[in-house]
Length: 204
Image 1 (tube, rainbow, N blue to C red):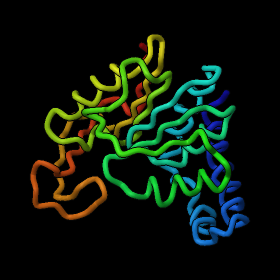
Image 2: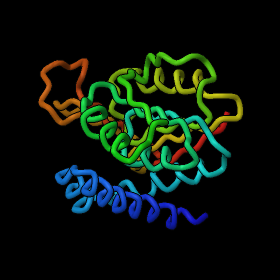
Image 3: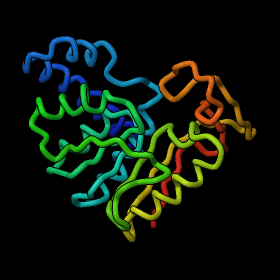
C-alpha cells in the first residue's frame, strides 16, 4: 500500500478514536484528538511503520518511546499484541491505556521500560519500532538501545527506527530532558543527533 495512504489511515483512525472517546464520556480527550489528531511531522514515520506491520500476519509489536497513537492503531488490527513503552511518561497509563480500555483493546499493554535495558526475553517481538527516540539518549545510549532492540527481535523480525535528517552530521545538546523539562543534570540532557538517514527499516 502507498505510504501516503497509510499516513491518512492513521489520521482517520485518530478522528474515529476521538468520537469513540467522546461517546465513552471522555470529552476532553476526544476534543484533544479532534483538534490535533496527528502532527504532520509524524505522518511518514507512522506510515512506514504501518506498512511494515502489514507485511506480517499478526506480529507481536514493541513500541519503544514513540508517540502512542500509532500503537493504538496497530493494536486495533486483528487482536495484535502491542507493548507500548516509555522511560518515565505517566501518560502511557493515564491517557493511552485509558483510551485503549475505553475502546476495548485488551491486547494493549503499557509499561515503563528503558530502551538500553529492556526486561523482555530474547527474540520476543516480530516488529519493533522507535520513532524520534534514540537521538535523545545521551552518551552511547543509542548504541546500547540498538543492541537491546536486536536482542529482543525475533529472527526475520523487523526493526523500524526514525531519527531527524540533516545532510551534515551534528550533535546538539540542550538543557532539557525528553519531556522538555529544564535539567541541570548533564547525564540526562537531551542529546539530539542529526544523522544522514531519517527512516531506517532493518530486518533480522
